[in-house]
Image 1 (tube, one colour):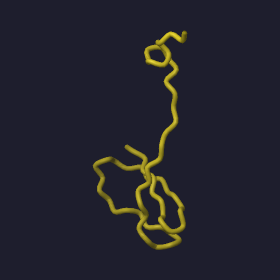
Image 2 (spheres, rainbow, N blue to C red; image 1 turned 30 degrees about the vertical axis):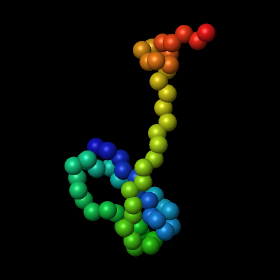
Image 3 (cartoon, rainbow, N blue to C red; image 1 turned 180 degrees about the vertical axis):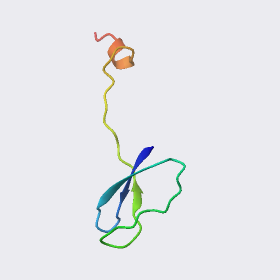
Image 4 (cartoon, rainbow, N blue to C red; image 1 turned 120 degrees about the vertical axis):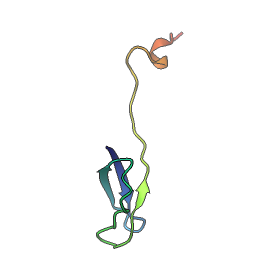
Length: 61
């Protein structure tokens, strides 16, 4: 299951929906504006600090 974020283009409210990537259900409707929401792509923040990754295996000279 994937988490999808939808955002209203007018009021900018967001909602998260968990569904399968194969689920082709309709786009959610904004409860305030009564218009279809748009899919919003957000960035994720993570660091690879364990052994075996380029940033940890290179020597700092």
